[in-house]
Length: 436
Image (cartoon, rainbow, N blue to C red; front, side, top):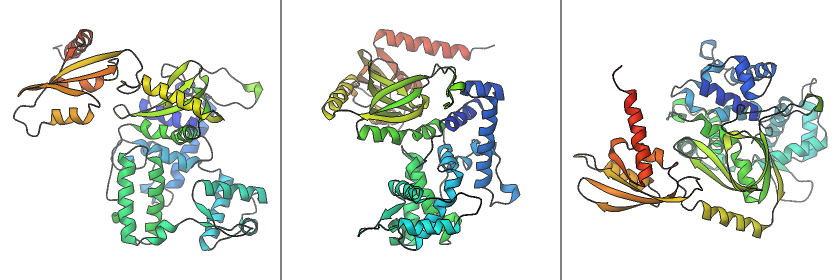
């Protein structure tokens, strides 16, 4: 995974997609909380990445930066977060050194000192030569992300490429595996790990001269770029949850005028930010498939807190907590969201809705959808024309979009106030279509 953070690029790409280029450079920079100079530098860097990724193509097939986010089926096959991982996974000085290390370990198992000698003799003269500490740090990083494996045996330890998966399978089996990973990465969450595995399999198949059309049989369309972009923080938070560790981050709420603030290391150039420094204990992560949003549920000084992951920047792990205390807070959260349609912790209410069956339609797709998506709700009455669905939820805010999505096939019965809200909304929608 990436050794560097790319909060700025994530917010940059999110705004670019949402605004479709409607902002000027100055407006963009102000919204991001950076200078126009930094905005220009970031844009140049992203353009360079696009050029380097497609430099092997003929001139007429090379992509401009703006073309990488066009809403076409083919251009959507590579998500923007994977693009960022390619852009900033390692520094430029590290990329050549790590490439040399991987190439050397691909042939045989080697010790750290043997790899140091290879690097010192093979690196270009304009790059600084690494020392033993640097090589051992690189090996630790590569081992943590599963690229290499330390062989059992006496010291000094020997390291080799961990590629048993592709070596043990035939090309036909690898194609089947590639198709499975491709489908799962494009249709399930989380997806980034799957894209990285897919890319590795694809490169291996192409090196084995498997025809290109056999490697890319599927195309996908993305509706929510934020779903993929916000996965940058997902594995950091999952690691903190697994090890019961608190996290520190700068948070920008959806109502904030800015979505990012540069992390200044020089105190002479510190600036006020609209982000809020948070220290909290992650307990649960929730994904809202309807809006493509990730949420972090955690415990802080004010009790249970909820954060939109798109507003989290500069995230770092902090100290761990006692296991018994952690389990207490986790149980407290479970009780609070027991009747949450998603993450609402408000007052519980019972919602009753009548769903109308489609006329002369088999199978009954309305009922099938309610049974599939209705969570713990139940059908309490049914006749030939309709059925009544009942569910207890923490407030009506989160269930409203789901009920509204059924259109004229759904009628809210209770509570009365909720029914009135829905009537008012439908009247407002009707007014938009009245004659001019």
